[in-house]
Length: 335
Image 1 (cartoon, rainbow, N blue to C red):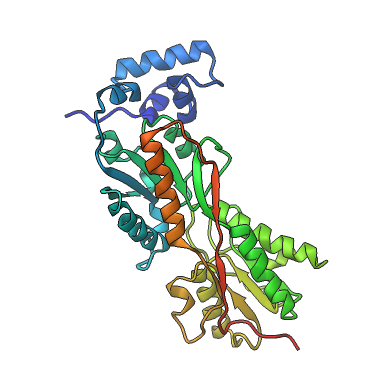
Image 2 (image 1 turned 90 degrees about the vertical axis):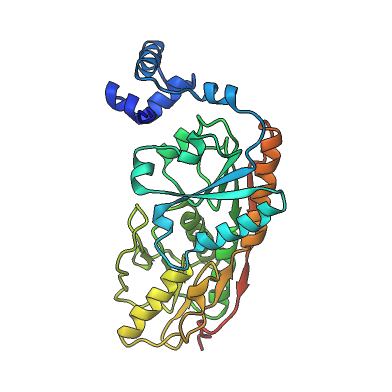
């Protein structure tokens, strides 16, 4: 059986981008009529299967929802997103549905390959769990099942999404540090990596602004590259009195590195995290953090996707679920 022709194959043949091919095949704006005709002709010659054809032979329901997680988020044994998937699967059972997990590999994301479970028409909808590339989001515009983003959003407003209130939660936990007397506060996280980290940084920054505190660029510490792979943390020479970390794993790694350099937590500096996952209680130091309400986020995403399975024209926009601060032992009052 020959391999299914993808939009990337067409793009490579013609020397154009995947996004251009997607726009042409879906009659979107931004492509000249001449190029659109050329792309469609090439697609037909190569045997590309249009989704309109798939839609015409789709009958009834499969009673499966695809849950897609990028490989870059699955490297931990106790992955945050595997816990999310567990909640999704349990909640889907109430609808007599099954959650089919697909790990989107680096190659699949780069080459814009849709999951096999979608190509074989085994799912009634897709939940995209965690950030994916903008190019891949463009490809999702061509699918003929409803799509909901969970735990991220971006400029593509046509997709419904469910997120934690990252901005306000980090704003609150930074206020907590300031009320404890801290004035030299760093943020740890690559602010270009995901929408969640960006929003957490902006919440931190708003708290500084409201308290008349300057943003020190030395106190913005990257924790990963733009592909999501963790990098070695760089400790500022002028040590802050507190660190706001974008997630608990990074807070755990930071505390470990500071301990190795002879610093005591929280006596020499305080640390807070985000997520309230296994890393918040993995060591003797119990971490003050923000608990993400996974269950409510999963329930909301499933209510939306099931509603859209019944009526694909329904729109929900961006739905935000509030987290809460869990107060533990990693913050010291500045005397």
